[in-house]
Structure formats: C-alpha cells, structure tokens
Amino acid sequence: MRKEPAPVAAVAALLYGATLWGVVWYPLRLLEAAGLGGVWITFVSYAAALLAGLPLARGWRAVARNAWGAAALALTAGWCNLAFVLAMLEGTVVRVLLLFYLAPAWAALLGWLFLGERPGARGVAMVAAALAGAVVMLWEPAAGMPLPAGRADWLALSAGLAFAAANVCVRGLATVPLGAKAVLTWAGVAGLAGLAAAWPGTDVPAADAAAWAGAVALGLVGLTTMTLAVQYGVERMPVHRSAVILLFELVAGAVSAAWLAHEGVALREWLGGALIVAAALVAARGEAGGAAMAREARG
Image (tube, rainbow, N blue to C red):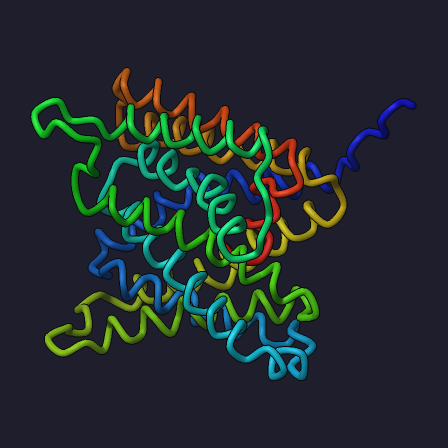
C-alpha cells in the first residue's frame, strides 16, 4: 500500500514552528541587550501569550477533576520553558538545543518509571545513543567526568528533563482538551517567571517602552503562533513524520547562530550531537516520538 503524502499545510506549519523555535534566541538576546533580563522577558512574553490564549481554552471541568496532574503539568512545562529561555541567553545556541534534545531519552525513562511503558529494544537503543551523545559533548578531560560545563548546560539539561516530565503529565491528562493544556503551560511559565521576578533583591529593569512592547509582541505573535502551528501540524500527521520535521529546529538554530552570532561548534559537539539526533530519529519512529511532547508541553 502506498503511503499518502503529508498535507502541504501541515508540513508548512511544522516547518514554521520549528524554524521559529530555532531562531527565537535572536529576539531574546535583542531584548536582553535592550535592558530586559531573561526572567522578565519570559514573564512578560508568556503572560501575553496566556492572555491571548485564554479564549481558546475549553474543558475546565476536566482540569478540576485532575487538579494534581494539571498542577504538575504547569510546573514541569513552566520550568521547561523558563530554563530554555535562560539557557539560550547564557549558552551557545546549538549546544543548548542539542542538550535539550535529550528529552526523548528522558521521556522513555520517565514513562518506564511512572507509566509502566516498557521501552523495548528500540527504546533502549535510543536512550543509549542519546546518553552516549551527552557524554561525548560534556566530557571534560581535565575534570575526568562528563559534567555540564556551566549554568547554561545545566539549564538546557534540566529544560529537556522537565519537557519529558511534562510529556508524562500530558499523557496522564488524556481527558483534558489541548487548548486547556496549552493555557496551563503558559500559566506555569508566567507563574514561575513571575515568582522569580518578585524574588527579594530582584529589581524591575530600567528598559524603555520599546523593549517591554517587544516582549509583549514576542508572546502575542511568536509564542502563540509557534504553539498553534505545531499543534496544527502534529494533529494532521503521523507522529514519526512530524517528529522528524521538527528536528529542523536544530538546522535553523545552527544556521542562524553561525550567521547572526558567529558561533562555532566544536568537533566533539558535532559528534555528540550526531548521536543525540540519531536517538531522536529512533524515537520518532516509535509511538513516543518527540512531536508528542512538543505539542502541549512547550509553548
């Protein structure tokens, strides 16, 4: 039987979402240069996305019946996105993206521990390849062990782990509509960033009105359209196809970082990244591919 081609609109939507996720580091750094810190950029942009998305949300009775799961989703997805933004501002783009893409490996492990999902031979191979890639990337001969090199690495790794945990929460909230899950995600990010911004000793940035307006525009235009585009695409294509298309985020990130920030990638990072991408491709061929996570947990 011949496979039906993927709808053009769905492919275009996924490429749009993946491209924006790959280049979002650039407006983030422009806003930081304009005087807004990463926490404030995250709070303002996700609060704007939350307000814009509220009319789309349905099924709050189902949320109320699953209050603990909804809170877990908001917390894990919230940290995922906040840590990803901070890592992008502090680290090199490609390295952050590659460490974040360990998420399918974490998802397989968490699914096994909390949902009883046996990974099987394919899943074990995927986890092994991803972790081997991380070891290659993080190996420091002077330290003698594969540890993150700095805060950006820790943030990227924790963002991927939180992404995987949020995916487990998403699967546990099967009766909650997608719109409500997206709103829970945006609320979680805005809430955590708001707490960080209100922490004692944290001052309101002395940025001009254009910078604040830029953060609002990033949320209203960038974050909402990225989320809706990815949701549109993955709902109209098999998971294994949409997950592979979403890997275009790595291409967009690498090209934009080399062009706009003149960031290079070391040979060791290329080798480790190749293993991580191979693991993501293996995950994409299984039922727990990366696209299932990107749909709700990353907004």
